[in-house]
Image (cartoon, rainbow, N blue to C red; front, top):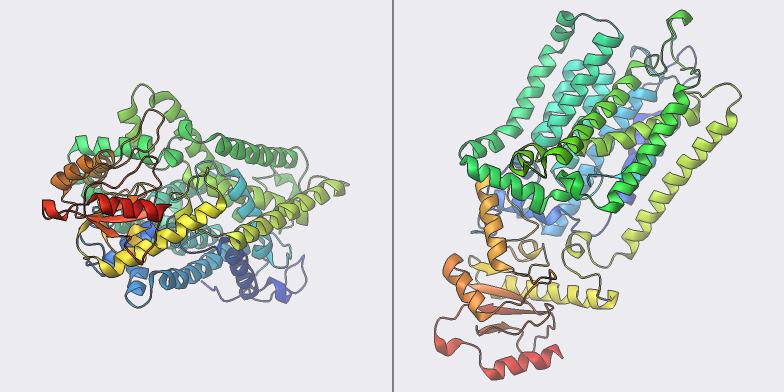
Length: 599
């Protein structure tokens, strides 16, 4: 598999490939697009979740005693690949190094897939002979715009450094290889990607396999036995990679009682991850964006379907022309059919959710927990981007004398590309609180100035905790945060963001969340009391409390106050320690001192 560059070549319908078409140039361009799009402050939304686990994987003393960190290592390949960085660098430095590596690998996979489709080269069968300069670089923003504004299940590819970003890199490489009929290398790449993210790999394998089956056997009337033989080695390698990622999760479920497995699925689908797993819980804005994207894709495809198309390929006899997609090059067929299969998978998941979630939720949860909608969020924008590029370059034509239609597609694609790059650049430039902390940290009702002050208080108290407290004691932490372990390397009773992977730990996590945080009828968080602390101490042996003074009505429980004390000042957070005797509890003077500091 040559990833260095596209060879300069000639085809019957094209001149010599110019330098802008070379793979290396396009890889650099795609890499820069990804950096601009995703280059926000550390940590991003899931980075504390993945990177604290990666650090613990290589250093068990990091967060020793934390339920999440000591639960099953489903994404072991990611932890093995990058976790060692945390032993040499700070957490933030480690993430930035890994981000650049991940985006570089992702841009390789993206550019390779696109060049397998549009770049002319000898010996690759019927390709689309169109010389698009900076091909992958120009298509990437269109695809990113579709995912950014049209996502349905909250899936993204280009962002913070986590396991699925590596997986998609290999999935894209695999699609490029399969499109060129290089089945062994293609399935091997998909198998490697599945090792990094097994759930996504499941749907990539299923949809690509079904797409190839339909194209080769139904459309091209091939025979089943030779088709299986040419795929067999690739399938074996792919299954090996998939099992390497799946066996840890499967073994954890096997060791868990069926009731706990069912409860775990219920907590995942209807409590913690409904915004990814259950369409009836998706937000209105998600539905709106997805339906708009779907409408645009359908209109474009129907416009092409109603007109006579003219692919710039090594054409067969004119009498053999069929429907525009059946007449398309095999590489285009594969990507479009994979997108279609992904949409059917998502449609089935939607129907299943609507039918079963209301009257058989336990059964529905066990099915829906497999992320039926994730791959569709990626492939639908890819399909839209491919059709748009095909139309705007003339590789795929509406009809003769339809120049205005092609111009319209070109203008819309250009506007979408510029808009997403500009908006993301503005967001990243103006970001004062990293997304990975802001989403679960601040209240929208707070002013921006108040949010920044609270974030400053948060960093200050975490720095104090890291340097001034015992490292292997259990903490009760604020409900509205997800970066305590990231900043302190201390274990916490439970974090809403850090739901474990194995079923038994998920059930325990849910029990701890319910025990630690109570709400009133208006779903407002209730203050922590001395009685609640004593209960949690007796039940879970918590030793420290990081108290959130932003909670309405929160006062200082009758436990020893460690922070803030003069000369420290922090109006948002306080640190308490479990009392060793009655004499060590807070006094009215201590309470009064803290109230003065808050004012």
